[in-house]
Image 1: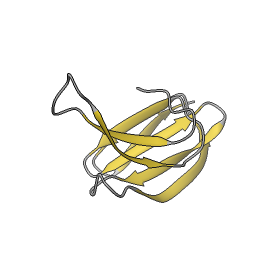
Image 2: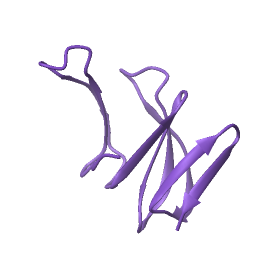
Image 3: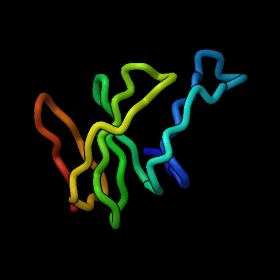
Amino acid sequence: MAYMPGGFQIIDISNPAAPIAVSTLPSGAGSWVYVSGRYAYTGDSGLPIKVIDISDPVSPSLVGSLALTSYGVYVSGRYLYSIR
């Protein structure tokens, strides 16, 4: 999980000695991120869960949100499991 103070970032770490920021999506504050397949899920204990399409790392897009606050999630198949 990662802290995201102003938005969601994708960073290329193919060269660990020189990471490169690929893109940023302003999505508000969040304290965790979970990635499963082509989607990233972000949130915080006081914010809705946001679903971000990361299939194109250069151009991530917010595809939906869920008005459910959470301390973290796990995704398996078509279900999202949340800790509240």
